[in-house]
View 1 (cartoon, chains in turn purple, yellow):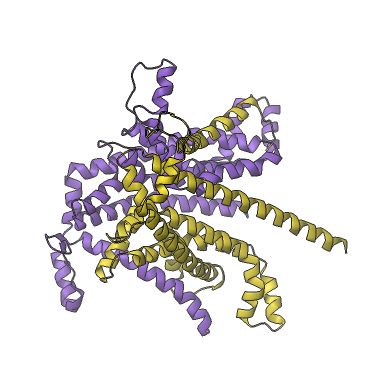
View 2 (cartoon, rainbow over the protein chains, first blue to last red):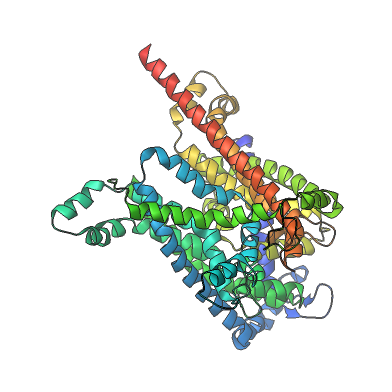
Length: 298
Length: 272
């Protein structure tokens, strides 16, 4: 072990400890503290300077007051449930929109593929905020979608789309579509075409062959894509703030408002801790899926 | 996969790309609209661009954003490359699992949580919030993306080249500089670009750690579009979209050319 190697390991390690792990310890600590009208707006329960005695009094005074508050106040658990609902529905919608695109790309002639790939990736490089913003003028009451609907005669008067949950679904599908398309495309591209031919020779119709052969074989891509949409959608803040309305409850927005508008740091921290606990399940499942894929590739 | 590019495929690709690109096309078109109403066309005009460039608050925010993005992505590239090297090469050391956990966790962490945690850290240690804290926060979350990009290149890299350099008398550092670095350079560059765009783009984390004294461009955009659509923002978006489009297309042309050159060299090497 030489000094250079030690430095190589220590520099990024120390950085992540200080700026990633310790902040979470602080969040946890504040989540267990009590709210107070002061600066900073909480009374610390754990007093490190008091040493071991401080730690003992911390354990004896430990209550999960902020967490029980989250469970009792309807605002919070409805916000968690509604975030889950919005994230699940929009993941499913993204799959419905994304699968045919990925399938079409996988069937496209070879010389088109680099261009198609670039066209899918390009929106990912453009600002997320701008992509969300671009829907505001389309979905507003005088917006293009309403103009189109009235011109085709589907509705007589404009319908409210912006500031509803529908707008949030559209926003999530739109911004996260590349995350769904790319893993499905890479699964479909690897697929051995002779399997489909074999299914058809054995009497399957094209639709049957799709459901019996193609779709099951593309499942790792579908799973990866769904997690890549679901995980960020659950904690989404920008989309419900710009496209959603006052009735759109999403936990990212609640956390933000709790912190900045109500200045209730202990509750905001407790909201963050619970959100993290909810996210651990899909994150672990996602990692397992990726691991299995890597092993299958080797 | 056997290719049967049917009408169904053509339609789904066309509709899909229309969905992806129409909102942007509308946004860009209406940035040249004379009227303040963003949904009614009233003739061609570039006046919103003029107003944008006369608006000092936007120019200041743009300068802050650029400064933050350049500094944070550069530091993040150095730290991220080191982290990638540690993950792929350093073998076992105490706390390795926690290290790789900390590298991958920020990739899936909701931004509101990262932002909140960082802010509480800065308040606890009594650091004044401003441009400096934004830079620290951006380095932390972008270095993980850099490290993922670089480590995937490092993992596929033929280690015997490095060993050959060591056998021929290079010090480990020389071997890294003259063999490893040139080979992983494309990944390092794309890691930097990714970190740079992520930093340019970031709203939520900056919103938490910025404090009242510093405003980045996304924060400025967010506060002005919260009240509704605004043609000045359309003009700004158009500028940003064009920069990205030119950047991505030229990067893909450059990489295509370098692949072609590499193939030609390999072919020449096989012939001689």
